[in-house]
Every structure is written in structure tokens, then in C-alpha cells.
Length: 329
Ligand code: COA
Ligand code: ZN
Image (cartoon, rainbow, N blue to C red; front, side):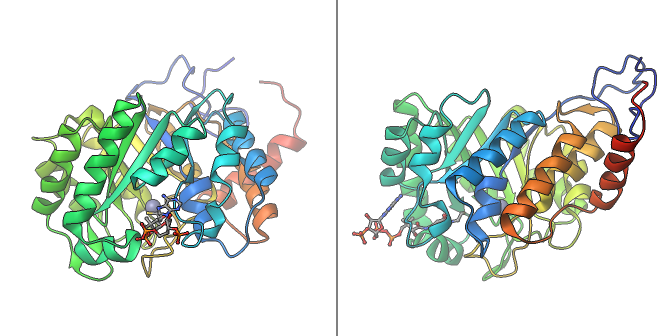
């Protein structure tokens, strides 16, 4: 029986609840924990550990994940096993994306069997230099070149516009700059333009303002948003984006995250916080909260550190209750 808007365990149950009144539609969550999350951790997770994490995400119902980056292993040693991970996950029944910021990364990704790649262009000159060692003009040129080559190979593509709200080196990012960069990426054929608050500096009103500037020139179905929770506003920002019609959101299970090249960037918005907010607000994510609790337990074991979004203490209590009570629902 599923006549409540919450399941037996007190957690909002899946979208199949017959009497959910406000069906606000499907939301695609791309879990970036294995890439954005693990790239910045002092503890390196082994290939086997990464595979366990990915299986835990799949078991929780995650259907889209960004799992690694094909970048210099000197720059990001945690992603040095990118090709092995890609090959080992070829049969997983989910969309798997990988970061490939230049042609060399794309070649390596394609050779390892990637079917979806993401390029990353930062909105400021300094952030591009710190991240991929080239200025803004060259970064745009290389991004368009890499995107074009990926499309020629028949790959699905995501194009990030990073530091879209604020740059740790150059301050606030003008919306006009984000638009100037997003439009050529769209015109080059990127399937998805991902507007990224890399250092978690945005507030909901600013999300609205930036989307007001972007949505007249970008089809809303092709825009995703990527939030970090540095100031505790990740969920509020994601809700603002949902209210503006965005249906693609990045998040990281456990809120694991941070960018090694962007000082002050802390964890991504946690997938569990986003799923709880979205499901309880009438959106369908297809992702199970008890499944995410299990995935957070696993990542904590692998990293030897504590993780979890703001909702995690409550979610853990609910999950524990669920294990001790007879399941009668
Ligand atoms: N994958 C692996 N190695 C790469 C590479 C890639 N995509 N691109 C370049 N390299 C190698 C080159 O072959 C060269 O190797 P060598 O020293 O053994 O000859 C070396 O890296 C330097 O090449 P160069 O073209 O001069 O690159 P660079 O030093 O300007 O660095 C990047 C460019 C993009 C590879 C590097 O800045 C990087 O990996 N950045 C990490 C970006 C990232 O993951 N950010 C976090 C997420 S946003
Ligand atoms: Zn990020």
C-alpha cells in the first residue's frame, strides 16, 4: 500500500505514490561523487573501491554519474585510473560521463570506451589558467575543438561553464560573460550546458537572475546546474533552479567534493539532500534515500572520514528505525 506521501520508514517514498498531489515532473540527477568528490580527497580510493561506490549508486537508483577525468595524472593523481575504471564499467546500466578537457583527454576517454564526455571551461581567465593552464580565449578554443571532436565521434557531451557565479581569483562573474561562453558551446552542439557554482558562492536570488539572463538564449531542457554547498545554500539554489524550469542537477552523494584548483571550494550539494528536497516537493528523481544512506556509509569507510549532507543525521535515524521495525507496509 502506498497511500502516504512518506514511506513506512518516514522517508518520502518513490514517485509511484498514487495520491501524490503535485507531480512536478522528473528531475535527472547526475551524481558527480566519483569525479568531483574523490578528486580532492587526501585518501585515494582504489579502483575496486570506486566500483563498489558506483554499484552502490546504481543500487540506489542513480541513473547518471560522472565517474572520472581524463586529465594529467600529475595534476589529479586520484583520477590516474580513469581508463581502467571506464573499461570496468562499460556494462553498467547507467549514463556514465567523464571529464575530458582537451583532445588528449578525449582520445584517452574514447579509447577506453566512454560514451559521454564533459569539457570544462571556466568563466574567467585566471581560473582557466589555474585549472587547465591556459587563458580564457585559448580555453574556449580548446573546449570548442574538443567538443566538436567528441560530437564527430558520436559521443554525448556536457559542457561546464565553471565559476559561473563567482571566481576565487576575479570575484563576481557577470551574467553576460556566462552567456557569451554558453552560447558558442550550445551552438557547437553540446547536449547539456552545465552552469557550475564551483566555489558554492551563489544564493537563490542570484540563481534566478543568472537563469533570467540565460534562458532566453539557452533551451531550458539542455541546461543543468551544478552547486556546491560551501555556504549551506546548495539545496536552496537547486530549488530556485527547479522553479525556473531546470530539470538537470548535479550532486555528490555524501556531499563529498571540492576543487583542488579553486581555493575555498568545499563539498558539492549532497545527492541525499537534493533527493529529499525534490521528492518531498513533488519532483521524481527515481533515487532511493535508504540506498543513498548505504552509499554514504560506504564512502565514509573508503575515505576514513565523515560525510553526508545536512539531512544525513535524520536520514540515518530513519534508516535505523526501518531496520529494527517489522516491515508491514
Ligand atoms: N590526460 C593525460 N595527460 C595529459 C592530458 C590529458 N588530458 N593533457 C595533457 N597531458 C600531459 C601531456 O602529455 C604532457 O605530458 P608529459 O609531461 O609527460 O609530456 C603533460 O600533460 C603536459 O602537457 P600540456 O599540454 O603542456 O598540458 P598542461 O601542462 O598545460 O596541462 C591539463 C593541461 C589540462 C592536462 C592539466 O592542466 C590538467 O590535467 N588539469 C586538471 C584539470 C582538472 O581535472 N580540474 C578539476 C576539475 S574542473
Ligand atoms: Zn564542482
